[in-house]
Image (tube, rainbow, N blue to C red; front, side, top):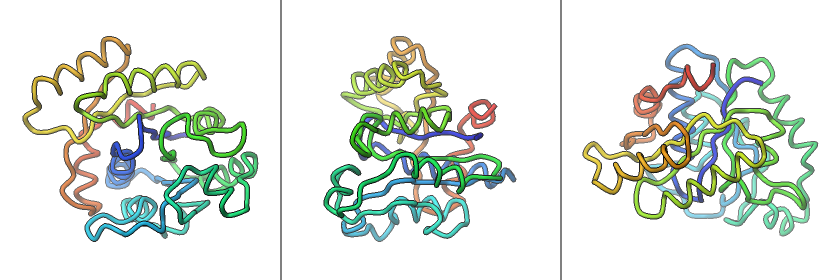
Length: 226
């Protein structure tokens, strides 16, 4: 399987916008790309009029049906293992991996977005980190730009490396046109202490494929996918 696994240092750090930007940029360049959000929760939450739910944004970026993006969906905005418990239908990790591989079969690049951070449980004894490891994709980590991001990002890097994951880069997002002193320092510190490439994703003004692609085009995607 060729592609990237997009994770985050926490919930709400911009990983879906990052994943959608990667998808849109690859599509704009002529690369056959398939986005997946294998497990999605929170569909019962009020929708943002400007930004669609995660699977719909990824589908829009790729020009595909949203139903083909989210393999397992839940209403409550809770972790997957709890959502599955509330629904009375446990997630079978082996079946999930099979679904993912079948969904991306024949595509040029698979962009798989996790749920929450790496240690979020999917099923008893199985978390997002193990799913990423089983898929064998390089990891891209979305992280905030401001205060607290150093600790969260270094902990995520440590968790990824302890499982043998191949880290392509950390992406600080949204990266302002005129970053503050702390934002510039955060980027330099994470790169030095984490021994990792740190890229930045500019703010994306709207949820259109064109705007997403423009942001994604600033990232070294060819290098990450090589």
